Amino acid sequence: MACGFRRCIARQLSKLLDLPPENLIKSISAVPISRKEEVADFQLSVDSLLGNNNDHSRPDVQVQATRLAEKLKCDTVVSEISTGQGTVNFKINRELLTKTVLQQVTKDGSKYGLNSELFSGLPQKKIVVEFSSPNVAKKFHVGHLRSTIIGNFIANLKEALGHQVTRINYLGDWGMQFGLLGTGFQLFGYEEKLQSNPLQHLFEVYVQVNKEAADNKNVAKSAHEFFQRLELGDMQALELWQKFRDLSIEEYVRIYKRLGVHFDEYSGESFYREKSREVLKLLDSKGLLQKTIKGTAIVDLSGNGDPSSICTVMRSDGTSLYATRDLAAAIDRMDKYNFDTMIYVTDKGQKKHFQQVFQMLQIMGYDWAERCQHVPFGVVQGMKTRRGEVTFLEDVLNEIRSRMLQNMASIKTTKEVENPQETAERVGLAALIIQDFKGVLLSDYQFSWDRIFQSRGDTGVFLQYTHARLHSLEETFGCGYLNDFNTACLQEPQSVSILQHLLRFDEVLYRSSQDLQPRHIVSYLLTLSHLAGMAHKTLHIKDSPPEVAGARLHLFRAVRSVLANGMKLLGITPVCRM
Image 1 (cartoon, one colour):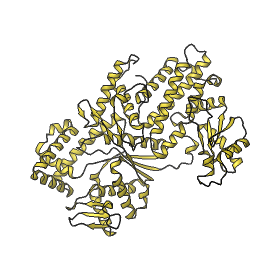
Image 2: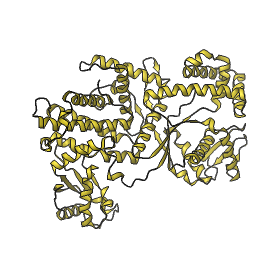
Image 3: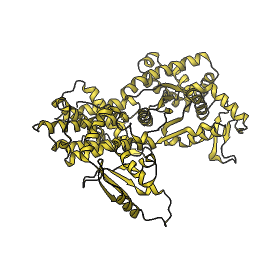
Image 4: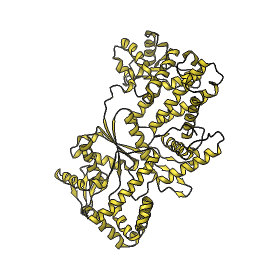
C-alpha cells in the first residue's frame, strides 16, 4: 500500500545508504495535502535516519538532505526529487499514481489500507477488549456510552488488522448494590413492571431503597444481610439475583443491536466471587496480605506504608471487593484465552485502580501483567435529553433519532428514504460518534446537540451526507462507465489532491493502531469529504465526454469506498440515501 510506491523509493535509498529497505519504509511518509500549493507525494525525514541523538557535531540535517537528493535519480515511478525542511521529497509519475491508486482501491475493497507494507510482518495476536461494562440496575450513564463506542472502535481496528479479538462486557452484577436491590425489590418491586421494562424498574427500586436505607438502619442492615446471603450461595437470594441479571442482559443486547455493537462474552463480577477467595489465599501465601484494626484485608504496594499505595482487597465481613474480582478475572482470562494483550476501556477516574491491579498481578508473580493495558477517556459534560438528565442509553438513542428525523424533514434536499427511522438513527449515531472521536480520548468535552447535527462542517452528518451523495452519483450514472478509465482525464488539481489523500490512508490506520486514538481516522475522513465536496462542484459527470465522465466516476467511487471503510472502523453504518 501507499500502493508499493514507498517500497520503490526505499529500494533506491537502500542502495545509497546501505540499509535494508524494511528499515527505511517507516521513515518515508505520504505528504499531507495542501490547499495553497501542490505538494510532493512522499517525503523522507532525514532526521529519523540519523537517529535521535542530539549530538551537535553531526552534519547539518539540511546539508544531508541536499546531498542525498543529489545522489538520487528519477525513474519510471519517481518523476521529481526535491528537498524540504530536513526532508527529501518525491513526486510520483502522475498517470502511474492515478492508475495504481484507483486500481488498488477497487482490488482491495474493504482491505484497502490494511494490506500495506506498514503492517507487513505484523504478528497475529490474541486480543481481549473489555468495554462498556454497565452496572446492572444502575444508570447506563454517558461514561458507559463512551466506553462502548471507544471499545467497539478498538476491537474493530484490531480485527481489521487480522488479530483474533474477544469482546467482553464485564457487567457490574455483584456487590453491595445487590444487597440493596434484593431488599428493595422485596419492599417496592412489582413482577409485571420488572418483566415489561426491567432496567427502568430496577433503577427506580434502587433509587427508592437507597433513600430508605439512608433514613432507616433496619433497611441498611437487611441489605447487608441479603448481600451476605448471596456471597454464601443462598439459593433464594441467588434466584432473584439471576432473574435481575438475565432480564438486564436481554435488554442490553437489544440496545447494543441499535448501536451496532456486539459482544463475544457477557461476563461479570459475579463469576469471580469464588475465585476471589483463591486470589486472597494466594496473596496471603506470598505474605502480601495484611489485616487492619478494622478487620479489612489490604495489600501495601509501596512496602513502606504509603497510604496512597494501599489497596483494600477484602471487607471486614470477609466479602470481596471490586479490585479482588478484577484480579480473579484477569487470571481467569489468561487461562481461558492465553491473550497477548488485554485492553480495558474505562473512564480516567479508574486509572489508579488499574495501576494497582496490574501491579498486584506483577507481585503475585504473573509476568503477563505487562500485557494488560488501560485505555482511559475523559468526561462528557452536558448530555441531557429534552426531558432532563440522561438516565439510560436508550433515552440517548431515541433523542438522536427524533432530532435527526426533524432535521431531515426540514431539509429540502432530503430524498425519499425507505426507512426514515433507521436512516435517522444511523445518521444520528454517526453525529454522536464523530463528535466524541474528534479530540484526544483523554480530554473532557462539552456535549452540544446543536453542534453535532450541523450538516456542514466537521460533523458525522456531513460524512453521511457525502457518502449518500457519492452513492447517488453511482446510481444515477450506472456502471457502464466503470469498465476502464483513462488516467490522463484525472490530472486536474482537485483530482490529484484526492488521489494524494487516498494514498495516505494506510498511514492514518497505522497511527491509530499505534496509539488507539480514532481522531486520526476522523480527521482523515472529514478532509476526504471536504475534498470530494469541492471536486463534485467542478468535476462534472453529466454532459462530460464519456471518457472523462468514466474517469471521474471511478475517482468518486474510490472516495466513497474508502469513506465507507473508515466509517465502519469507527462503528458507523454508512447510509446510501438521506
